[in-house]
Length: 344
Image (cartoon, rainbow, N blue to C red):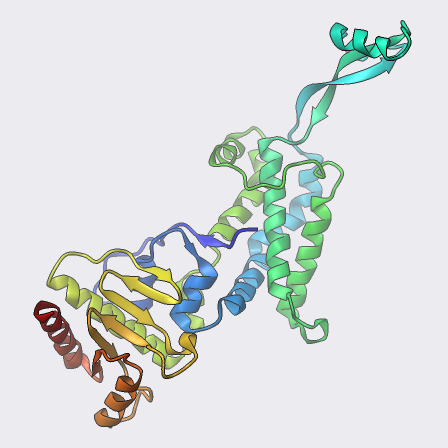
């Protein structure tokens, strides 16, 4: 199954640093280009491996209220499945189960030594592989696969309540997917047209939990989820990053949306490399603005600027560096980055 993607930006007011209610992570989260890979993006923001983030996101999806509602309503949903009628060629002997398909009948009699009791009929049958049921099955597949991601390589003896709940929901979803009425329904992502038809169909109430589950899996986490994974230094880095972005935009137009590539968060000339994500402390980490590398001290409350500058220079990759220890440093960093760009 494809990686979980986040599609919709949260509706936030256009706040800037200094405005009441402004939050750096909310600002950054709202500027991410959609859709994006949740595990890779959150991992780049907080410095955790993408595999670990995928497990956490899987647990969030598999134990979400939407998943619980979907599974609770499944017995009722199974009894209320939408169906369509279709015809299929069926070989009959001595009886008719629908209109006779004479060309197929003659071919069948020829292979039956001319038996006049053999007919091939267009027999009507009830079809379950339709848009609404594809939506339902896909929602179940999302829960099942999310539970698998959440519990992979986790020893059952060490699973906490959340993981056990995820595993239980995943097992239930997998069992419902194999229900006789759903066993032949396609296990593919429903098209936008199928989603719209299900939302507007006569039995839309029966399929509402499935639609809500798909919405949840599409946008499984928010900025609050990311914030809970950040340590103090990461939060300060995010604040410095967004203050730099806003100040840089005062000197020019708005920067492009943020994207994640190879573990780095970037927008135009600005890139953010999380130190924990990089692993090796000698590798580049911090905030790059053109030719300048800036970062907060390794020890946030260390008063020694010289020590912080030496540590930053050691991982700069021969870039110019500047440590950010207060708001005035942010303005100086922007001026220096612009001067370096002009002199290049």
